[in-house]
Structures are given as structure tokens and as C-alpha cells.
Image 1 (spheres, rainbow, N blue to C red):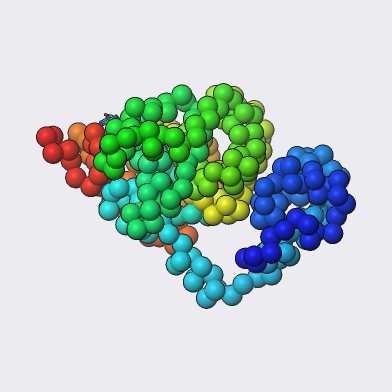
Image 2: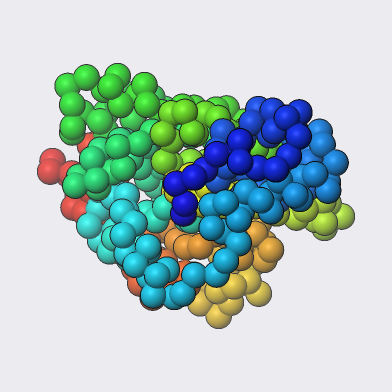
Length: 320
Ligand SMILES: Nc1ncnc2c1ncn2[C@@H]1O[C@H](COP(=O)(O)OP(=O)(O)OP(=O)(O)O)[C@@H](O)[C@H]1O
Ligand SMILES: [Mg+2]
């Protein structure tokens, strides 16, 4: 993308420019936003929003297609975030990707939140150590964020866990609208704090609770899709990783029909949104199995990992 990412070169009125800058910290963030959302957030008409977005896209070179070899080079150059399990990293193609949504689903205690905590620590490490020198935004819908547990995981890298805890922004989401709003309003926080990881733990709880049954399905899907759009937008605009967790439900005719009655919740429409989808299941003791089952570039494979006092690891705890 071009270096000339400046609001002042957009041919728009001063008033509109000011409103845009209030909502979008960078031209990239503006370019990645659908014009309808720009119009709503900035309280300007749709035509002005479209003009501004189109100019922003042109300015950062998003309006023109690029060739596949250029794209390959860009993708290869992107660092991955380690999960602290070599096996889990391997099935993810080297770790969690930036610019994408990665979903971890599974029954209770399969390790979804533990992986999220581990990533909140690891994102802060250097690129050589499997991080991005960045910070994390943890959107907590189930009130399960546990700072003491994150501190326990960070002892592997420091004697002072506060150094890690102070780089994790925790937002407790109280309902669907609040959850959506937190991401919609996160641009400034992300930009000014170098946030490179956004976690939504879990994507499912509020949506399932507030929109139960078939009658509510269209409204649920509509809100879910708009939330997914915003998550994808921030992932691409700020080159950050989005990690979501999901519950599972029983559906004999579901996506794994014939092999398993269980499938991730939130249905078909949501299912297309994460770039990579991983299903976790329990095995003996601390052992967990992760299966990547839907990815445009990674084969279906399984990894075995453990939840240890130190965090996610390939092997069991030493005294186990
Ligand atoms: N300090 C710790 N040391 C070792 N293992 C731990 C520690 N804290 C939690 N665990 C293990 O992690 C597992 C819980 O994992 P996690 O919280 O990630 O579940 P989850 O998949 O998010 O479940 P839910 O759907 O209920 O949110 C439990 O098996 C628990 O024993
Ligand atoms: Mg959890």
C-alpha cells in the first residue's frame, strides 16, 4: 500500500474530513469500511461517504487488482503468531494468521479460552519469538477473562507479569449490540496502541441467548453478518489477527454428518466467515486434539496439545 495515507489529499469538504478523522484514525481504516457504515458513523449522506471511501481506496492502492505472485509474496512475508504448541502451529500453517479470522470451537474445557490467553501473551513477544511486538484486545462475553491465569502463563517469559497484563485491553461485552459496538468503535484504540490481536470469546453466547429459535434466525444472521464484516475489516485494515471462539451443538444432519453429531454453533452463514476453522476436543487428562477442518489453504489435519500450568504446550506437564 502507498505511503501517502493522508486525509488532507481527499477531495472533500473540511467538515466531512473532520467527521471522518474523528471516526477513522487512518485512511486505510476508512478505505476498508463499507460506505453505509461510514455514512452512519460519521452522520453524513451516503453519496459523500461513497466518494470519500472511493478516494481513500484509490489513495492506498486498494482499487486496483494485484497479480497473484505479488499477493503470494505479501502473504509469505506475513509473520505468524505462535500458540506455544509446535503441533498446533503446524496445522495452522505456522501459527495464527494476521488479516484473517480464525475460529476455535469446542465443548466446555476443550481449551478455547486457554488458547486465547496464550495468544494474548505471545502476541507481545518479538517476531523471532513468535509474536508481533503488539498488544491484544480481548472482548469477553462470558466474563471468563482471568488475569491471574494470564499472569501464570507469562511467568515463562518474565518475573513481572504486569508487563504483559498491561498490554491486554479487556472489554466486557454485555449483550449483542454492545459486542458489535466495541469492535465498531475500536479503530482508535487499535491504531494508537498497536493492537495486533483481537479476541472475541465467545462469538456465540450473546447471539444464541438473545435470538433463540427459528423465528429469530433472520435477525440473528443479519447482526452476526454485520459483526463478522467489522471483524474482517479491522483484521485487514490493521493487519491484525482475529481469534474467535464458538460453542458446539448437536446436529446429526450438520456439517460432519456421518462422522459426528456435533458441529460449531451459529449456523451456515457464520460458518463462511472465519478464514480458518478449528474444532477442539478433549482426550485423556490434559490432552486436547485440534482439527483444522475448513481453510482455503490448509489441509484437514489434527494436532495434539496439552493445557499445562505454564500454558499451551506440546507435551504434558512434567509432574503429570
Ligand atoms: N492454571 C491452570 N493450569 C492447568 N490447567 C488449567 C489451568 N486453568 C485452566 N486449566 C484447564 O483448562 C481447561 C479449561 O479450558 P478453557 O477455559 O479454555 O475451556 P473453554 O474451551 O474455553 O470452555 P468453555 O466453553 O466453558 O468456555 C480445564 O480443563 C482446566 O483444567
Ligand atoms: Mg471459555
